[in-house]
Length: 348
View (tube, rainbow, N blue to C red):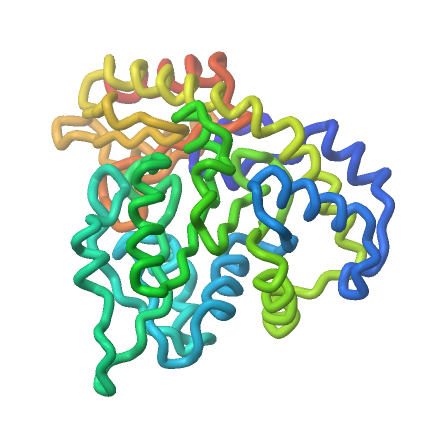
């Protein structure tokens, strides 16, 4: 990658090792269950996360929707954060396709949903109300800065779900970032969940795909829901081969992305006309504000970074002057230094 692209970790490209594995991957028809590379990926992913089974899906959005479709029926209700990816950025699929009613509660700056808010959101048994069936959290919570949620908090949410006979889903798109932050195996962060998705195509660099994990019975139903959504794939081993590299190798280098985020944050914090809260850099997200005193508007900064320096960076959706920069495999300390120098030149 020549362009320095901070827009998201979704822009990461497959590594050379991944491309070689994809070219050499043995394949079959995954709908028939005979693609050996997909089967291997699912088996290793389930083992890695401590669940009975796994399903390769096309995206995290599809994985989350499948989980909701399995856990909830039409007219049922799911409790989730008002800034959750599932609620904000997945095109309303849970309601449009599943007839599932989202009951949102506030996402706090640390990425948590207050436990009392979850308790209050659970419906009583009343014919006037939709039935509450599910609680869902996101780890890390991307919309507030990639905030990781720890084992104790996750267990607390799970206990509420158990007490009320609810299912518990985790959108773990970046669960390995949370695991790296806390220094624990990812399986500990998802142990009490009935289902969990994680993305292969973000910081793990695969070109496409996510994994949904849960019990064997859950995954059996999930496979049917995947087919209904048009997600049944044929020779998907070409993609799964990259996913195997993701979970065998790429999860172990994620701390580098966190370290690079800190380097970037510290560099930006030293520049004029920017405000950076270094205490909120927990994983691979750096949020910063362009102040009104800056010589460029946010749109002008975006344009000049791209045209003059081949650097892609954007304000976070819904915010005019708050930028989100995301580090990943292709963002090296050298590229960060180039970025800081470019920003210094434009803002001085």
